[in-house]
Amino acid sequence: MIASCHPSDILSHKAFKDLGAESVFENVPVVEKSEIVIISTKPSVVPIALGDIKKAGISADKLFLSIAMGVTIKQLEEFLPRQSRVIRVMPNTPALVRSGASVYVCGSKATESDSNITKKLLESIGTCDQVVEGMLDPITALSGSGPAYIYILIEALADGGVKMGLPRDLAYRLASQTVLGASKMVKETNTHPGVLKDDVTSPAGSTAAGLHFLEQKGNLYVKQQQQ
Ligand SMILES: NC(=O)C1=CN([C@@H]2O[C@H](COP(=O)(O)OP(=O)(O)OC[C@H]3O[C@@H](n4cnc5c(N)ncnc54)[C@H](OP(=O)(O)O)[C@@H]3O)[C@@H](O)[C@H]2O)C=CC1
Ligand SMILES: O=C(O)[C@@H]1CCC=N1
Image (tube, rainbow, N blue to C red; front, side, top):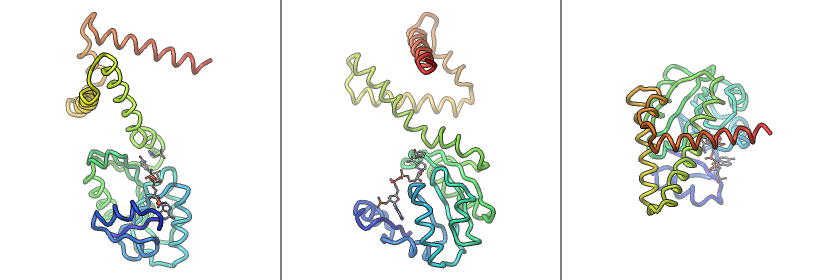
């Protein structure tokens, strides 16, 4: 494995080395020495980084996997040497704990073998689905950005517990395990989330009161947006 980073980025340089990768400060040697190249710069940097590769006139016999948000297959193929094989991927940060949700789209020159190796790579860090490019923006909003929305939910659940007297570490443990458990219920029982919600909600119970409160707040929010 070989990775590039900026000369001032000592932390990434060390992190790559700790992973057992060769770490360099230029993109061209990374592409020269690799069969599969992962493009993971910010979207605005993609044309610059790929421009370096095109200018260097490297052989195009490589598979490029791009995780850059919003950079289309057509743009990637234009930025790279002709005949480069391109696959666009949208992963998410739970990949760090091997619970990612990734999707990928094959470019015009990607082969079945490229698709298979991409699936194998992504399945080693979570789930993986092949999709069509038109789905990538909504998927970015759902599973790409989604963890941020769930963290806010976990923080809010824990804050509520702390407000009512729970120690913070216990509150975070319970909140995160609750999200994990609820998620597994949806995945493993194949039951509609509305039905699972009803199962928790006893008549005249505390969950019904909590849901009523949230619904009122939700309606309030929608009304504020409409004003
Ligand atoms: N964050 C997320 O949850 C997700 C992000 N993505 C996509 O991943 C990409 C990276 O996002 P993120 O990790 O958050 O961003 P970061 O800014 O953390 O990472 C970008 C990396 O690119 C490096 N870089 C900058 N310029 C160059 C260059 N010219 N050549 C090579 N490397 C360069 C940076 O190095 P240095 O710091 O040394 O400049 C940095 O390590 C984005 O395209 C984003 O859309 C996709 C899915 C989820
Ligand atoms: O917000 C971002 O730029 C990236 C894309 C998906 C998740 N984070």
